[in-house]
Amino acid sequence: MSGLKKNWKLLLAVLLLLAAVLVYFLVYRAAQDRYETDKKNVENQIQMMQMLIQSTQQRITTSEASIEANRKYEPIQEQIEAASAAIDLSRAELYEKFPVELREEDQIMYVLYLEQLFGTEITFKFGSADLVTFLSDGAAIGGLTLTVNYETTYQGFKDMITYLATDSRITSIRNSTLSYDHENDRAVGDLTLLCYLLQPDGYSPSEYIEPPVETPEETGKPNIFH
Image (cartoon, rainbow, N blue to C red; front, side):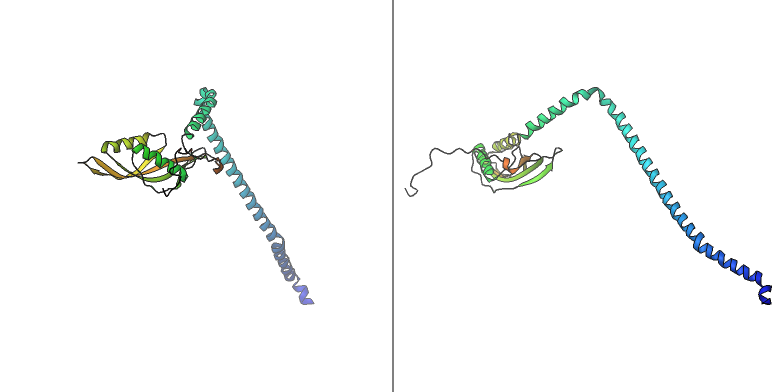
């Protein structure tokens, strides 16, 4: 007991040290962790707000620049509506020059048209349409490839190329073969044609219009065996 009285100060110091350690780990350390977490959250929020402010300022600057750049069009603002209507009308007139589909019966009619035009019998294979490109209004430009043969003079060949390039039926020549007999002025070969078609945005196949076909008055013999 006398030893305890002599060392009470040392014992008190040990108890105080243990209490300090408990206070540090149970109170101060937990509070410090919460502080660091709250600090990091606040810093992230500040960073996000700064980025948002910077982005908003950039949009404002871009909008102001766009407004300033468009001020030069202010004198013609009243003409825009009429000009837009004229463009729509012109587009509609252009679209009317394109077929919307080229089915097998259309291809037969076109080849018959070329036979009458070239004055020769044409052999061909049915083709299928492929997408060429989309226009800004959503309309689709397609192209159907047909390979047809020809036999004509050299001048006839040049006239044929010119006619196909300027015909109201919008067609381009993708490839041509030519075998020319100069002595007899005879040009023979094949033409690979790309026949264009256009399907407006929202087009439905039910809108297809069959080509007009004239029924011949004379259909031949009533009995095929005579």
